[in-house]
Image 1 (cartoon, rainbow, N blue to C red):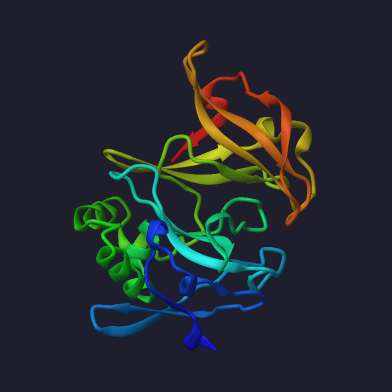
Image 2: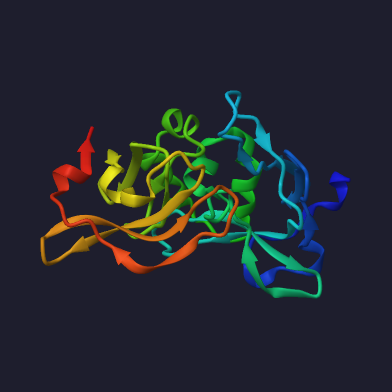
Length: 253
């Protein structure tokens, strides 16, 4: 069945009906593409089962039919490959496939550049004109291969206002914030951020870092909550902005 998953492009503006395929219930499906005159392939996976000690891979959920495409907010910053849920009759509208935590499923460019198993995917992005050699070199500089290969599912903020998930049952989490001068590892203390949402649930909150001009500090704005993994995150009626010093929010390492 792998022979039916052949993608012609990762450019969302050029997607055709033949680029639509179904990944439902597959664990690590193979995707084929043409680079130059050669047919090549790579595998994708959905997510790890964080509830088990062995961290087994989860299968793609039901109705995972659509296409892979490259998503990028700014040309100068690394983007990511996402999966848009769509059908053959309409390739121009759709929604992104979501992870159990409610954020979009993706393969970050910084990881694609570092991982040998995604060499073909990187070549396809370059061939499609979606990624420049300069951007690849920037990724190699910002995210050393030895670091990136071990952190496929790390929380890396490429854009300052990137949304990230904070597990409800955790007391701290690591963030890596990328910038013009490199990347910084930061430990985020979650107690005051989660507030009344903290507990033993498998859910999470969605948050982003914002600058508070009144107190002249960085704060974490929580704007969605997911009570159980797999559920649709609910928007909060009020925007939670912790008003405490940055020292209480961050432990920089």
